Image (tube, rainbow, N blue to C red; front, top):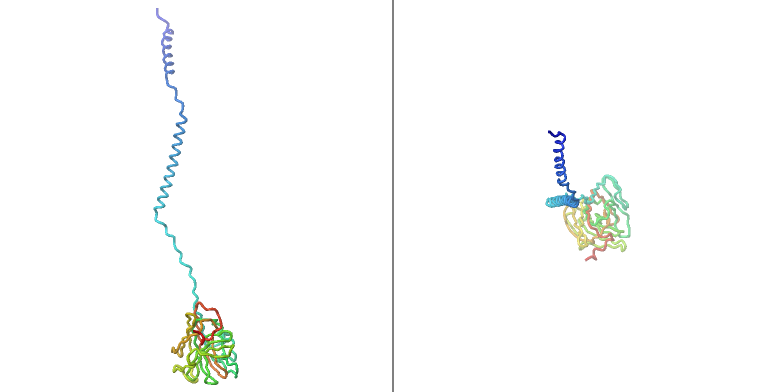
Length: 285
């Protein structure tokens, strides 16, 4: 007799279930994650990243150090002005107020006239101070000088250095002689910077002829060297103490009238000695 189909089905189903169960039980379960290993790998990756950054920074520093130094542009020094010489020219076409302490002086007909001065017993000369010229030590100065009235044996010319009435000058006369003199205002005495006082020269025009009188002062070793020129000719040299003082024009004694024109002054910039009264040149070594 034939078995029912349901029995047959059970016969095959049961072994299948057994096989599925065995397979399910025999399959390996998934492994649990290894936490320490994962942390170590992460730390290694971080360390490697830091090393990469360090290496890149080192390489960049080496590259920068290998470059040639960039030159820093040097700025040119700031320009400073050097004081130039003081230059004064006066043709006496007008009264500019330049000439001070000049009694019986007047500017007229394009010239400065000094004197004639009345008779005096103090023995000193008469000065016209160039106020614009200051108190120079080294300089060049010149003037055209013409005798107009009075005693012909008396001198007139350039005031080379003055302080408190004591002064040194350069004088000419109508007799074709010249001299450089020192006047002490306290002792009322005169001294000569030149041997034998008045010196004759054919470079001077006699009488009422106009003569160009010039002096150039250059200091060295505590002394000022004086170069004397008459009508463009260097005729003598002498010395005086290297100190500062006022300059200008001079008429040597009373009873003498002189006309001056075309005054020129050029003051040099020098390391000047302290201003002091001119000492007696005859006593200097």
